[in-house]
Length: 280
Image 1 (tube, rainbow, N blue to C red):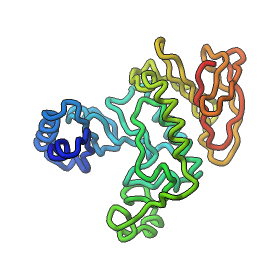
Image 2 (cartoon, rainbow, N blue to C red; image 1 turned 60 degrees about the vertical axis):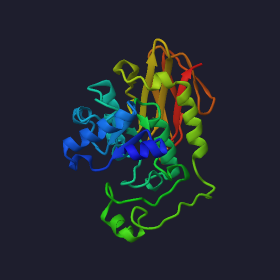
Image 3 (cartoon, one colour; image 1 turned 30 degrees about the horizontal axis):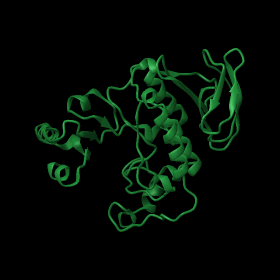
Image 4 (cartoon, rainbow, N blue to C red; image 1 turned 90 degrees about the vertical axis):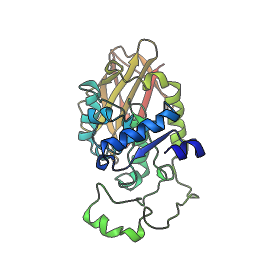
């Protein structure tokens, strides 16, 4: 790690299979790297989010959003945890990694990728783009996690990019780079609010519908965002959600304003649609 720090200026690493390494070795790695750069980041390839990673000196973990986000009930429980016990350290807000199915290969394809990116970009976590996500790649890098028996047969090691030569289709016309940029600019505008990890800054809102998710980010100093999403990739759904103190709000993704009546916001969401609203 010190070699790559000095030669290429890297500022962080993920420790693959770190749980298999002796703690003494990990402690020495962290100590040597941070003697060069005190802010050097270590990410734990851990799909749980526990105090153990904090004690071992990690700044973040991969976490389990990638496995739960395409299951609305599980994802609701993940989001609710921000309101309850919380998380001891940040995790990656990503729908895929090098060991999982591609987001664009999930039900909904690129629509799911757009939904997942927008919903995950405003929670107190770390947005993470796994290479190829932005152009809608469907071929996995490795089949380590969450694959069916049929998928494992479809992708033997001699066809996987982790083990064999592979080239992304960089020229494909249908991709989501513009969407990622637009969502990122909104996040950047509200950066101090979005990166606030205090429990008070995040509020889960019950919607009364299994497929409609809603949460707010708010603080006295940095305003408020309301995120409403349809996790169903096939159906238009109506919603009626009570947002305390809501008046007129504006969806920052479409520019459309929504008028609340007695703090009740009503409307419809296209399949996979996400609203990211601020007070208008």
